Image (cartoon, rainbow over all chains, first blue to last red; front, side):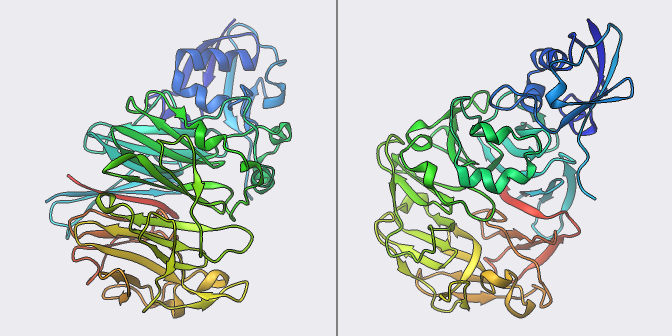
Length: 91
Length: 368
């Protein structure tokens, strides 16, 4: 399914300032894989050496927080929007 | 003569440019990214970034250091590589979901970039050595180093197992040295296939915590070493070392040993001069009494303090990668408090050229 993904500010620099990207995939992990295929520099940021979604990446989907460990099973619908970000850290 | 200084900080890179090395223009690029190392080779500048959230990557600039584009590739271990348990223990605080429990090995920082012999080498943590021969488009692990027996028992330094120093011999491409905190100093004489430790006579405490080593690549076997436990010199490529601390301040270290503590060691090959920034031992890690001082050796035996223009109320440190020379008499260094100092005369006088930067992690200087 086709979805839109909002990049976090740090990764917009990688994409020349683009805020939103189009991607295909029925799960969060599938969408990240497709984004990495379309835009290879992003793949380094989404997946570690063992092919796992980086543990501190989270998505907001329909007001729900989707953590990296849920990325492969969290299902998406055509036209959905994902806000890609990272887990909060610090005080 | 123009000079550009690339200052890697915890939140981006300051690019300082000057035509006369008196008046400087500053631009802050790669905003938000911790910039841990930089280098320039054959007209391309590289900046290594790491993020606890988004991993390690490399940016390249092919212009006047204004435009930076991320490269598609970066050093990465193979999925089957196994990690060092003590390094895992040290970096586990960022492993929120337990990926390290699988025992894998990950590149969590690029500590140094070193161009030589038509290649660019990267030293990383978890400690390892990688090389690119196509301007960063692809990276290959140097297995002779990365997979050598015994790495599983290497003792990490406080910041983990970081390969932070790479030295090469301009006359012998098969000879190379690398330094790892706190696994020690290693040399290969066969182009990276086999390596041996070069830490004889260097004081250790549960591992050789080499902080930085410098030399003239044209006279490569004369090495100057800032160790956690003192300053040393070798005249035989590291086969043997002797203390070289005449004139340096010494302090009592955690284990009672008295020596000169600091992080950076650089060498200006044109002037034949070496530079260190002593700190008041490993308990305090700031300049003694607050007097920031660079020490220079021009005879390879003794050191002399250089403080003209440096503050007397500095309680910041200077990290190992945060000092560089332009080989034209220019010396530059940055503090953990975000100030950059520059000298045009091999340290005789200093000028503050930038301040209020984030924590400074790396400094490189290029003649433009």
